[in-house]
Length: 110
Image (cartoon, rainbow, N blue to C red):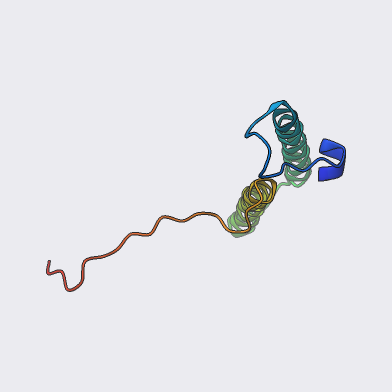
């Protein structure tokens, strides 16, 4: 679902009151759209994984299959998390996530 579909062309602006009713409605719709997309994608992954549940005559074949399956699940999870981070930053009008910096003491002996 695109931003236009979510908010009818509305995009929160910096000069309006923070979390006014229009923004709350916009973000509520956006969160619902994300939830639906995540649920749809997870359901698709489950269907694929269940259809791949085959008998493997050799332990090495089974181990290889399980490794591939774990990589697919991890990739899907990572893609979802990256999408949510990008979308959240875009919706808040930021292109960079704020990062905390930790300074290490110079020449510290252990």
